[in-house]
Length: 362
Image: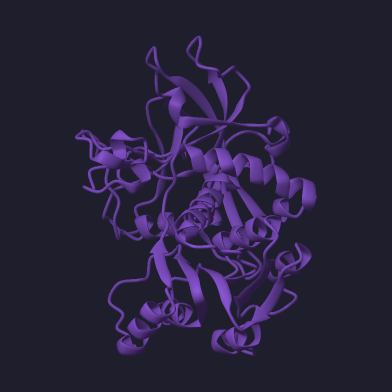
């Protein structure tokens, strides 16, 4: 079968390659891949920054933002041929640590987890893959055209739900939320927070007629052009930001977010900053504000099954609240033989995908 593979740690080694079609074990389902999203992690692996092949292989099948259709499944699994599914990305470590033992493998504490398409397991950018049913999440047919966005949504689901869990330490009635960055994660955060009733301000430096800015506005959030109204100015206007979702990973904006959030506020970091950058920050003032104003800063990455389940409910609600809006986030679908086209960044791109199934069967 065809797959997009890389030689880990070898820059620019991405290629379409024939690999063995997987044979499912008795406790596995066989899934036909429909499409796989491209994200920054994939680009970093393609650049040779990281990535780890499964034991015994010298290549890694790329891709973790997946969407597919069950070809066959074990009896009693709850899955049937034709079911639309997404697969959870991370797998628990073999020790396991207390978190992995409890099913919270996205919070693994010893680092021995594996991740499909990233670390020690093949990804989903192939015609088929096999998986145990407990790692597959069913989607209704109504989400077939946007199901590939499920994995990035779960990162935000985890962040928002954990922010709520953290704030059970007090009486917290959040009203305003600021999202920094209008990329796919930032847009998913914007939609999720709007659907929960927050007044949302999404900040970026894109022109107001850019497709991303329009998506922000059309879900009822306010698009803030950061080079006209920087974060510090926005914080003065709001006067007490309850929740910030930082989706740029730009170090300066990360620290500005901590400064901008209001008393008892929460900052959720969703991105990984590039290495090798240095930044002078007023650490004394940040520490003072965090202590005196009871601020919380935490990170979110990856997700376990309960966040995927929440994502199915919320993605369905997005479609009900704003019909067709989420679909506009998928700006280009490239066939597998032209996967390089999906890697190119065009000015009006939001999310690009690599397609395997024919459009008429999507």
